[in-house]
Image 1: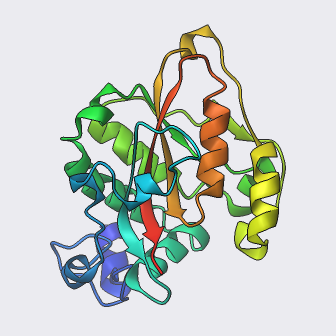
Image 2: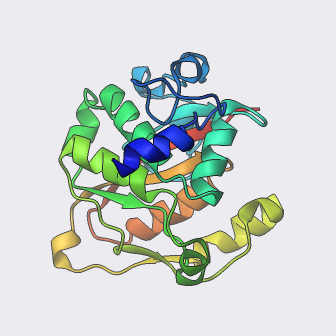
Length: 227
């Protein structure tokens, strides 16, 4: 009854375009779903996301679901997820992308899903990690555990976009670490994040995970910046 009244006075709107959602629509309207830019990375093993890390880190697999353009639908979705508390966006994108990824043989060997972590101070400020619902949705669809305690951030830092590329590449490898034991050895980890930009953060997190003996790493993200 309460939900009905809330919908009556505050009808749900699309997270992408702010138009009213129809009865059968959830979070993202049908029009936005049709216009949202898909990467189709899952079709090509050596896609542009995978090539982003050539010569940097040895990955099993890498892909992103959507293209991120300035002032586009995906930017609006990620902004609301990251800064406005709309965590349901991550769940929807995760379930949607899982349908494409379920047939990827390499991901069927994965043992655990690991989010790019926030520093404890940043987590307190924001109240949540914007990657959590995306990772949890993939975990549920793939049937493999989600672990947000294995990888952690050691240093509180300002937003990466506010730093120079040189500053990012020189210092970011120092701010992630892992807390593991023998049961974590020889595992295949899927590292998840919101947007691939320079790839510096994901590279640093992958290097931290690879401190674990026998670790293999794949990367799956919601979006990838496209120039």
